[in-house]
Image 1: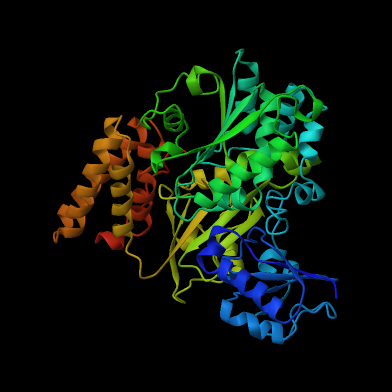
Image 2: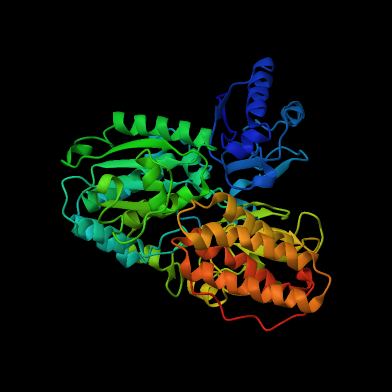
Length: 530
């Protein structure tokens, strides 16, 4: 019998629940039974509640089993899960059927994550067999201006906090004359409930490398840096290995695929500062300085890293580019709604039954994500509030769950899409405590450069404490008005989004869950500017 191919994820989430032990147990069990198996350590499919998810290659496709523990392996062998005779899989309690037919996965639109969990992350042959480097090869046949135009026409917007049109940044860097230009990937994924950047770097690193290389060709940059948070050791190791493999194969070179274009890439490790996710603080850190926000102008696209023109995009923005170049701007633009084009890898976390990654075209609703994909709360209790867009995102009540996931629709409702992180809270959550956490988080993580952020967040914690401790309702109302005034100062006076967005969770908690502060319901204030 020929060797049966098995897939066991190497993603950090799978490793945390024993994927390495499962892989070793499978290898040992096969050896003891005289069976030949080939184990591929793939990326995660993003169905986190089923990790470790073990897949078996069959004639009909891959068959999934999960979540698998080392103690399950012998029984799976007894049931014949490595047999190639059948294509539906072995009759075992962990049998899930064909992986691609699992509804959670089947009902997604995977463009950026099309290879995720399918390929060996460090196999260039696997990557190229699944449309890898097709975008770069096409980019090499176009002029830099034409590559930039493709990105502009696709409607791709930054998949970070600001949602700024990516092509405009690219065009600015291209138009700025300089002997040296840089590409910087912001992989400092610090938002609560987010893991799409980590999954990309661990599960499909060549996609990010290809996207950065295309950006370099389009803008005239010759050096790139991936700024990764120190809490991601597996991502750092995988990216370093992938860069070495891409360099050896000529995809990173002083003469990329014989085109005359030059681009080199290095990984740089951050030191755990949340504010270094802000692009100018990130540049300061890259230069070896303390991560403090720079005043703008000048824009980094004109005067960035070491004073040179620098294109800064986050991981998912750059990882979206290869598909745009490979398939064309129109193909990508046909997904989504309004000015929100393409797809977004959405991350479900918190009190949710089926946490994981869902890539959908813009326009999907929170209600669909929470129930059709997430399966409701993990506790079984009613969902009360959902924070969208990281620790500085608004808390949305049920009345907002039917809004289409769209940058403009969320901005109009006082919210933000951000990096696509969704954190779920059931009806036991106290929104006054969560609002206090937002202010405390800002006080701890502020770079300290501007007064509204540095001092405003500290005073915010104090005011929320007074609201919650005060037994007199009239005095609580006075403190609430003071808190709103403080939030207004932070929004309009802070140097960057750290202080400017901290009021989002605070004001949304006040507006939608006033009972948690011991105050009567009031008409929500006008949405804050996006």
